[in-house]
Amino acid sequence: MSPHNIISEIDGLGDKTAKKLIWNARNALGMTEFITAEEIDENTEYITTGSSELNRILGGGFQTGKLTEVYGPFKSGKTNLAHTIAVTIQLPRKKGGLGSAVAYIDTENTFAKEKIKRIAKRFELDPKKVLSQIFHARIYSSDHQSQMIQKAETLCKTRNVRLIVVDSLMALLRSEYVGIGMLARRQGVLNNMIHALSRVAETYNCAVLLTNQVSTKIMGMFSANDAIGGNIVAHGCHFRVMFKTKGFSSNSSLKRRAIIVDAPDLPPEEAEFFITSVGIADTEKGEVPEAKGLNFEVEALYEEEVQELERCDNTVDSEEYALVDVKGIGDGTAKNLAKSGITSVEALLDSDPEQLASKISGISSKMINEWQTNAKALLSA
Ligand SMILES: Nc1ncnc2c1ncn2[C@@H]1O[C@H](COP(=O)(O)OP(=O)(O)OP(=O)(O)O)[C@@H](O)[C@H]1O
Ligand SMILES: [Mg+2]
Image (cartoon, rainbow, N blue to C red; front, top):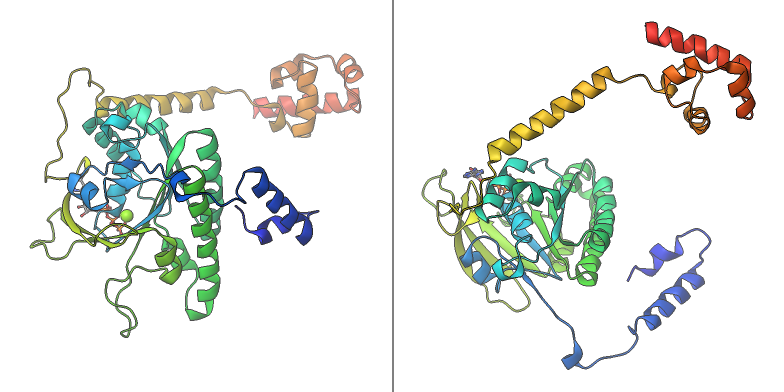
């Protein structure tokens, strides 16, 4: 499924070989035969968004196998939706999830563990387990973003990831590629990301959520609420959903509106939902069940973490020096020393230089003497 030019760039493969490989691989998978429509394996699955209204206009929930773009102004709830479905996908199927894990590509540093824990509690899941099933990557550049999108595929293969979140798709591209002159290049990079995600979505029947910002009106070229990224995003995504904050009386209202802008088989409907402290919901106050057995306190978990961190700090403080800290000893030498049983600075000081030198080729007793002197200096420093 990789484009031909990507394969042919691999060292040692020419154009011809790449083409042959791809065609043969397709043959092997039976991809070179037409099948009847009856045989098409759609197998779409749905993830609940936390709001039954939003699920309804999405045709049952957030769909697998497709790319969904959610765009809207700041504060419109995009990141909240991302957090909510990162939890609900972990629910069992009969409760609206897929019992699967998540890859979360975070370009804006807005991922919040505390929020995830609260949402987990709302859905009666163990917050700690939920966090362990979210694979998070903080992204610093658009190139890094491309790289981690590729990496996410590995997680689909090995970690049962069935949802990839990119929050947000355009933020870094927008800041790195400024001006009309850079547009073609930016769209090229974007195109590759969208294609890679599309391929993964299809191959692993994985859901993909891309959040996007909107552009402000510039000289009448864009309407006020256009998503950025242009045609590549618009055509690359199967579902496009707009979130709106406008039209609600006060700015502090947490009521939001979602509108299906484009979908292959959904009418252009609207729904209202709320942002709550426990994610997207139908009502202003998200309900946290008082179920029995749900006694994992968010605060308690937090304390545990702090203690763990403190413990790590202590061990770092009291830790002995490593062999590589000794002047003259590099990684390779440290490994060779370890093979002869010398794994710490203390052990090095205790060893007999003549004897040790006879055990390791390429090392003289003189060198060991020198390291011992350096080690002493290090410990007394
Ligand atoms: N714990 C909470 N309880 C209630 N509302 C909250 C809570 N946390 C955040 N909000 C509200 O959610 C809104 C922010 O939503 P969110 O971060 O999902 O927006 P966004 O669409 O991702 O925005 P941006 O474009 O800036 O990334 C704010 O209006 C904030 O008041
Ligand atoms: Mg956001």
